[in-house]
Length: 442
Image (cartoon, rainbow, N blue to C red; front, side, top):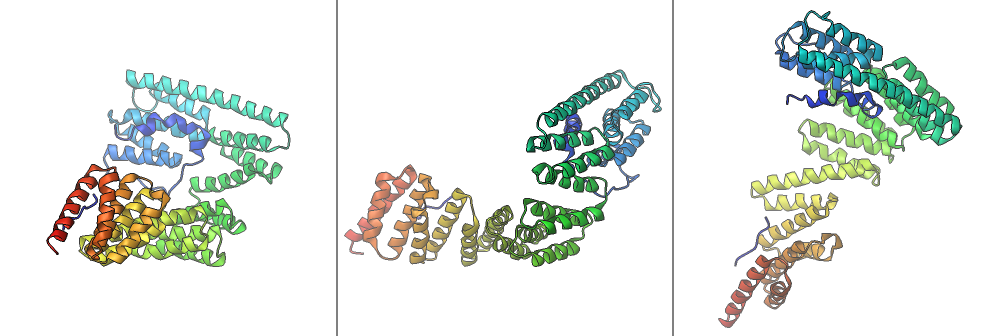
């Protein structure tokens, strides 16, 4: 019986580097532990490491690496090194220091005379920094006017936060800290105050103060275990531990927090982070338990939603592995779990049909029909091709179970109404075969 089966060297960072002068990017740059340059690295590799440091907000490291590259006198990387040096100086020490650095390069005080193209690029860079500097000053003045016109309101709080963010982008770290603290003091019950508190924590991370950052994130999570920032705290803690490969310590810290605050967003986020840490080490099997726990801890939160997505991937992967080993029952069990967690309607429907197909192949018709019914009665299945396939497996299952009358009725429906012509053709052939067998008395 025939069955139908389902079937330019990362210079973008430099080209966009000017954008880093704005708050949204500056406030999202993670830091990691500074790494010493290896003398065995090529100049291109050293440039890549400098670019990574810049992107991670490690500006002092970037400046040092860029100066070393300029000393190397390699014309191939010099334009990028110049660009990095000036931009990192701006982020580290502010507008005037960056302008002085650019002037020193242009006047040959860095040990080389810049080529005409490099001189022109420096002029463009200085003009760009000046424009952004002037724009920042104007932007701060505009926010101060908003505060004056809307005293004591959420609007004023947001304006005060924007001033602090702009001050940070301008390279004045101490002034920015004071500005963020002002937001927290003057607007304590606002979202802007919460954002300021979180930004101050991230500033410790960007400065490489990892232990201080871990302590602050723990405090933040414990103080507000059901807030969205508890989720941020758990993700940040996991990332901070992972920087040094301290996976065991990370799991213990996160598991302890989850145990102390059960059935909260904090607990779900902590369990999720443990599962993701294990997945990052290639251990999908042991990741299953904490991901399931994340769903159980706080079913309606975003951590649970992400855990469901990861569990779906785990089970689909397990099903494929079983299928490759001809372990049909193992594949069915894994796919059944995947369908339970999968929020993707189309993929879930396809998974259910795969299960039905596997059960039909095993001649377990009654069980196959149960999965077919789930597709046929699920409004989210939607697409006609899935209903065509479900009808097909229903007909095959009835035929295997010896109920040819029902099988013929379903096949005639497919031949008359299926959207996919392949199903219509196969249904007609199937009907002819059954009728021929009936005429032959079989």
